[in-house]
Length: 153
Length: 153
DNA sequence: CAGGCTTGGATAGCGTGCTATATTCATGAT
DNA sequence: ATCATGAATATAGCACGCTATCCAAGCCTG
Image (cartoon, rainbow over all chains, first blue to last red; front, side, top):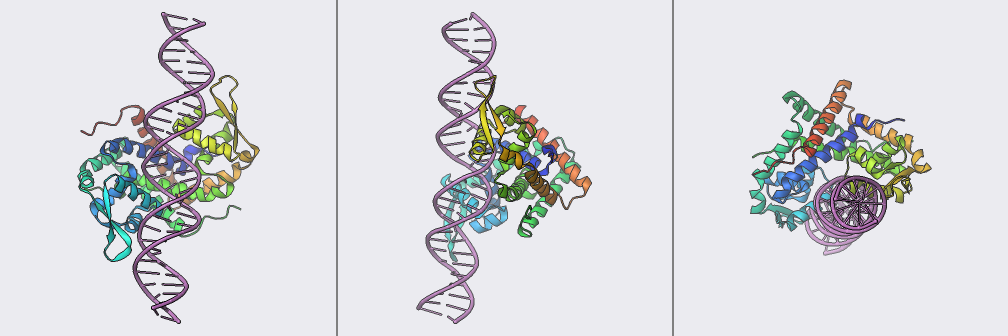
């Protein structure tokens, strides 16, 4: 019945992610960016003109979340959305020059944040850490589309 | 300038935490609990009658976040708040019988979620993973109260 | 004791995640 | 051609994190 939160992977993951997000937010706020906008820009910097569907597949967020993030990015002048030439339902998101100009500064900020977070780990530990996170993510994703959570009866 | 998100600790931490939270939410929703409420209950199950300040120190969230979570918990009949006997500014949060009754089912759900997430890791890997997360958290917390984020000039 | 600083808490406002629902367009079968 | 189904997006409503502000109570110092 006792439950030690410092031995709970989920608790630690939540706490760690909050600290990462806070650090990143502090660094990219001067650029006029928010964390989810940065995450989305990472995709668009590599492949401009993606649809909402393509973005949410790449970022693994729900459709409504992606729609809201894109709306804020359009509001903030980071993207424009134009109708998809071949599909009247879809839109493509195109970067504005302002958004393209932020790439170097924003990725530097993120790299810096990552470096600080892992500063106390050796190279081998950091590599192992990334690998463990990727494996846990894969496991959790598989559990989501596979088995629905078991009835706790 | 290129930035591989699958090699970014912050990106992976965010993704992993979302998957953990989603899994937990699915499991405790039938109990009428939300993740932050569960996290708060973990403290109160151990030490009933804590103040908002004590809770936020233990959980490392901002004061406003804790205030809102407690308001929802009171609304949902999980706690009652009564004035602190020695300090007219403070209140103590006391568990209702309903909240006490949820302890076993909720901690089982969380343990189950953790077990699934780590199912593909060996015992040694899981232990190392928890340890790495604790170390990264410690580093990030130190960076927060220590140096403000450097000017990206 | 008065005035000012500190501390506990509440509230407003926003970003980001979610679920659930509605809308619109595409497509395939009759 | 029509009609049903499915796919892409939008919207409402909520939880939970944050910052910034405000209020009230404690406390300390002159």
